[in-house]
Length: 87
Length: 459
Ligand SMILES: Cc1cc2nc3c(=O)[nH]c(=O)nc-3n(C[C@H](O)[C@H](O)[C@H](O)COP(=O)(O)OP(=O)(O)OC[C@H]3O[C@@H](n4cnc5c(N)ncnc54)[C@H](O)[C@@H]3O)c2cc1C
Image (tube, rainbow over the protein chains, first blue to last red):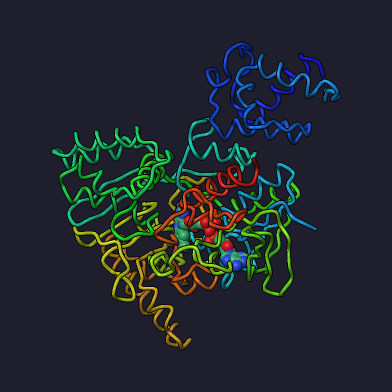
């Protein structure tokens, strides 16, 4: 997957965790938590969904990389570059 | 074959935990000793009528889309939609004490205005109490017991108002007599007074059916009529269970909703002192089927919490049933689109578990059930219209029923007075969820299952 494809995957996961949230205006450089209501349970779900879908294990010390869309994509790119895009 | 997680008990907490784990691809086995699911909140059919065991009201009502509310968080965590539970809000509930009634709906402002009307000199204190509750974080990790009574007395000086607020909160959650931990008080204050009540048209069956379908759909395995006799240990860690029939199941971890002492008794070594940690708050409930809707008799209340005396006592009574107080619930009195097919009034009263558990003779037990059910009804008709001529069938459950069908010692509906908020035990890989982890009620039990699964079984 490339950066854009990973971004779409994250959007899809966010949509699943927060179905009523409007994600069209998401600012990729700002923390998710400032733009939508995500508590620690939801946050765990981002990590768990990635594990469920792509078998990527994200250790707890790396959670800080998942704060904004930009940082998440940067962090995931090396982990997902050999994975086929779902779309 | 080894399971990732073995869950003991297919009540609401076990089912919710199971969904989380199965959704994230764990091999999960949910073991239930009884012939059906639901535990303390189950259902049965008797003489062609449907009965719900525990459902007076689903607490924590929230509108669709109100994301920050516990109900909606729970649905999201279980990947269910708001419509799945088909919740219909209550009509109106009340707390009835001698010479004073407080009405409440799912709009908290009604209760606020009722308080300022009936207790003008307490109105300011009440508003500050509510503010303190809004600002309190009951999930912060703090040690030790904090008395809710002491907290409330910082704001309220009228003991009648204090008791009228504690009455519904104690009745719907407390494993301890007359007072409870402040954290739990805050959770229950929000869930029943601020958020309020609802019910699915079909009752608890609807919720259980949705949960079990989801669990199975995600690949979870449910075994009914399958009790756990023993939790197997190796090097200080749980590694599986032995079933009542002697069969062994291996698991990387065990999550038990059976209760603290009930779980400890399945282990080799006890981890807490048994007597002090065994609950003793239990109830008798009299369920009447009527030939007409309660509303036709002029009764529109959803849940009525009452006390015949200003000094409300919430404790194990020294009589078989405590006739000084009770809960009157009519499942018909919700804002349903269609009226329910059956008409019912359920009345619950505190009971002395020892009396009910020690009756040896079945005939005497049946007789006692009838006798005390009549007394409970006679007491309630001081508060609601006399419905006795309209009774077409009756059932009664007692602490003995609760013990028989759920295994909870003493028939203690709210379990042990000491809660294990962390969900951990001295044994590695053995965790608790549900009643004795500390979140209670239908919604609370599900949240407990979810949070213990997240904290101990998923990371
Ligand atoms: C009369 C009554 C009225 C209530 N009214 C309401 C209400 O109106 N609103 C509300 O929100 N809550 C209500 N509650 C409370 C609510 O039902 C409980 O808090 C909730 O169901 C607890 O769920 P749980 O999963 O923690 O425990 P349980 O439901 O007790 O689940 C534990 C399960 O484990 C099983 N089990 C135990 N030991 C073993 C073993 N060794 N092997 C296999 N299985 C085992 C039991 O059979 C049981 O099914 C009521 C309860 C009662 C009894």
